[in-house]
Amino acid sequence: MDHHRSYIYWSDITEQTIRRCKIDGTFIELILKGEHVGDVNDIKLTSNGTYMYYTDSNTNTLIRINVQNIPTNPTTGTRNELALTHSRTVVLSKLNNPRGITLDEKHSKIYLVELTGRIYECNIDGSNMELNQARPPKYRLLLIKRPSYVRLNSITIDTTSSPLQRRKHYLYWTELNSNIIMRSNMDGNKIIKIGGLNGNIVWPNLIQHVVGGDIYFSEYLGTIKKITPPLTKNILIEPTSTTIIDVKGSASDMINQEIITLSKVGGEFRFAVND
Image 1 (cartoon, rainbow, N blue to C red):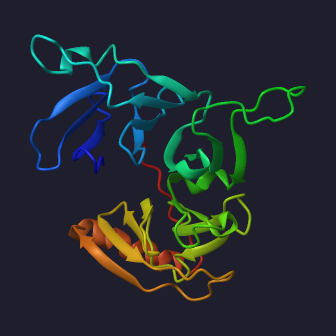
Image 2 (cartoon, one colour; image 1 turned 45 degrees about the horizontal axis):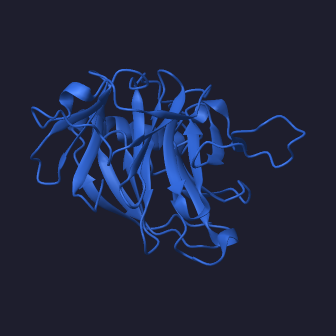
């Protein structure tokens, strides 16, 4: 979402496009399609609304575009006809099913998850991270490698709990097949489980940290919940969760209860939908 210009952006993986509209739902326009717009999984905007970053798992790339500089047809005043030609920059390539991203603009970094359990850091402009010029260039740094079955979809960052101390900033991510929410420091160390300790989370999907310390996350079967995890080294008790939205149908609710029951006796119910 662009708070400055009141735009909402979204992708459509069926028609392979990115669109936007005003927050009241008016003025829907096509802004991007064609090259590197296939299976777009996550979209993030810079805080000033100038640049949009997104992942495309069809081409295994991380892309940047300038959304303030989208060309307009001088005759019609619309952008739809030019969505194929608008400039896009490849920030990272040769990824393996990239999914969620989060931006750390203060330190010019992007954090990215791959479906297969890897979390990377890269420079926000895609530049070389290797300081020693005698060595080969390095455009991404592997921070965390989780088991390949866990299925990572989303990641978020907390830079507000201690604004002046980067060592107290955190990354949070969801793991669908292990039904947990995890946290690490910015170096990918001190990894701990902060949600799902009691087995009551089922297929956590998207996650977002907000100022104040709250974590919002969605579950694939149809809920959005909020937790406030304590900023301690070890979390032994499940943080209290608040259900914000629950649109599970009866069938989804039955599956939800089956998975919870199975997990509490040490069983696994793995998510295998090809989305």
